[in-house]
Every structure is written in structure tokens, then in C-alpha cells.
Length: 114
Image (cartoon, rainbow, N blue to C red; front, top):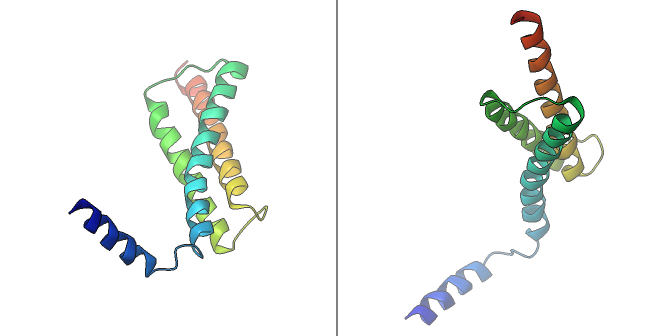
């Protein structure tokens, strides 16, 4: 029975031309992973270079920066691009968003809470 179900699923998937859309699917997955990696690497670099501590508020900031990278990566896939490579666009956008939001948060806290 399992073999028959797998055979039916395989036949159903064979009706779609998945091989021609394989590169697009890999680009989409790459945008998600590249922007997530850029947030992690940028956060680590900021922690090591500037000595900023991690706060519970930063989790929301990281999610917003990751979303910003994803959106710009999808815009790059759609043709609105800076570098011509969707993965690189998403990494640059997520890294810049992480850097700007975390450094702005630190300067805001220094200015208003001291």
C-alpha cells in the first residue's frame, strides 16, 4: 500500500515540470538561509567589536532584520536588484538592517536612559 501511495505521489509530481523550476526553488531557499546567516554573523561581529550585550528586545530586532533581507531577496528574484545576485542582495540587506537597528538602539539607550 505504501509503495502504491509513493508511486501515485511520484506520478502526480511528474506531471509538473519541477526540473525547470528547480533553480527558482533553490533561490528562494537560499534567500531565507543567506539572510538568516547574515543576521547571525553581523550580530556576532557587533558583539565582538563593539561589546554590545544581547537583550530580549534584540530577538524582535533580529526577526525584523531577517524579514527585511527576505523581502529584498525576493525583490531581487523579481528583477529589482542591486548586485544581480539574489543571495547577495538578501545578505547585504539583512546585515545592514541588523547593524543599523542594533547600533541605533544602543545610541538611543545612551541618550535617553543615562
